Length: 446
Image (cartoon, rainbow, N blue to C red):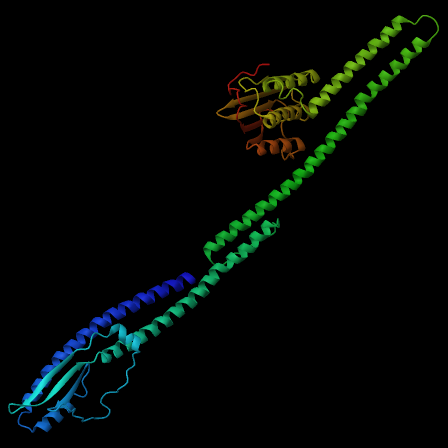
């Protein structure tokens, strides 16, 4: 509205300047033409009135030229005294145009004196003076009418703009309130569709953004619950393994230690053969505990990851699966990988292959599992295929698959689980950059 007002003000100033310039030129032309015309009329009147008496001639001239426009004629006798014959109602003495407006337009006043002669003698004179105020009054009346008309039209236009813009911009106020709600994490904000098509599109997109944020918040809450559940399940699983695996081993160690104590404390020479057998049992139990401890640590955090090349860690992972599941064939192809891609990427690749292989054996009953990982054009591609039962129709996404999807998505990658023929196929792509100093095509050798 302020811009429109400024434009109106500039237009008004330009219009005033044009009116003043045109009026100044018009007044100058009118006064010159009137001056020339009146001079000719005065001369003709004097020649026609020659037979009359000198006083009658002067009075005739004064009466005839009292009602002229744009000029004033003052008739004087031979002594210079004015002839005063005045008629009322011919022309008002006051002028409508203000002095400042007249000063802008009025040209210089011109005065011509014509001698009046009768019978060869001078009987007086006629002084003709230009009077531009008559024309200026007309210009002022025109300017006032034009200004009032323009003011009325502009006021009506501004009122219409105020109503129209208010209606158009009103949805933006609601949009601002909605954005404020989103800023305060209130994703329930929704906008009603306004009448304007453009603002209706903005409202529709705002509602879709709010719905997406609501869905993202719900997904984050679900993920947090899954993470807490996963942590609880991992703690429960670790506690179960400690109870079921480490408990018997520790009890066996305690029993063998007590047996050795009894053998040593018995009278006579200790039975060396029985002592050696107890020592061998202890050694076997310690080896079993070490294996269990190694498996537990690897499940919590692969100890070799970051210390040896990534391909070697993956090969060790497949070897561990083959040792624990001798009835299943595990085939790993990890040539052409860099030594590492950073701790986060390396751990993600390791966990995804580990979880995919675990699912193939535990849930799919696979007899053959093939895992491949290769880097090409800055993208690390992972494929895990098995010949098991594959994903069932309408299967739910478990914690393992959800964790893989979230890990890969956090790195800007893609995750897909397809039904193979037979079995399942896990496809993962992650954009990567090799660690500094490590070529992307370096063979992963320990």
